[in-house]
Image (cartoon, rainbow, N blue to C red; front, side, top):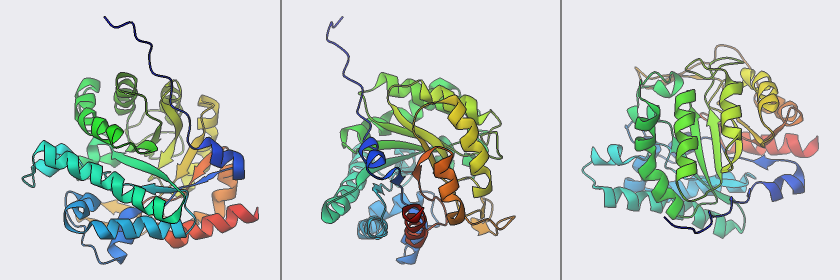
Amino acid sequence: MSNAPNPPNPPNPFVPLVEEKGYVLLDGALATEAERHGADLNDPLWSAKLLLEAPEILEAVNDDYLRAGADVATTATYQATFEGFAARGLDDGEASQLMRLAVDISRRACDRRGRGLVVASIGCYGAFLHDGSEYRGDYGLSRDQLMDFHRGRLEVLINAAPDVVAFETIPSLVEAEAIVALLDELPPVPALISFSCRNETEVCHGEPFAECVGLCGESAQVVAVGVNCTPPQHISALLVSAARATTKPLAAYPNSGERWDATHHQWLPAEESFSLVDHVVEWRNLGARLIGGCCRTTPDTIRAIAAKLESS
């Protein structure tokens, strides 16, 4: 047995930005902007399809958000999995190469702008299923099975050296348990964990959001925890409960309020009108330090969020 000391916990790369201006401005939807650039993403790989077909679009999207003021460039790896690439006939080595390419693309965009953190996105198991179950969490896998699913690509992405790995749209407590266990098992890396929620108190599978946040907050590798791809009208209450459960920086990047119809692969109108941009100052005052947008938000959304936060 090795007597070598454990590696030190990773520093929180968000802290300098929070100390400088009080918040980190996240980016918005990658797919929405890629489609504006002409991409057809009606595909099980979703935005990861562009790693195969049009990587230049991904770099352009990262650049769009950085020019809008975002402090991060998120990789097109949310739906990039070994299983998904295997369905396209790619072996594990080829899939790993594409995941590393995604990090390189975002790094180039940041280097060109002379600023920005590279955030490697990791979607939940439901994202791989491509059936909307990231908004249900009902896939019935154990903690160990979910660890096995996430392990390989997390190892690849850690080795690609992003500034942060972001586990996004996590719908259940058991998947959060798997992620925290994996982070303790693998080399230290700064991690953001954000949940999809179905109302003001519960993640999509039904567990209390505060319980999920508290679990993540106990991990030394987790540098921020919060909520994404959730209707914006739920965010304020969720932040209140999260602030009681952890002292970690909180993240809030909801979707536009529109609803995803997984059967017909289309977005449906929001059930109620609610301006994301009009509430970002309130979210910051409730403890959110990472603020941005998720599905159906755009660089214009991020630009408007920046203006609101800067003027308040």
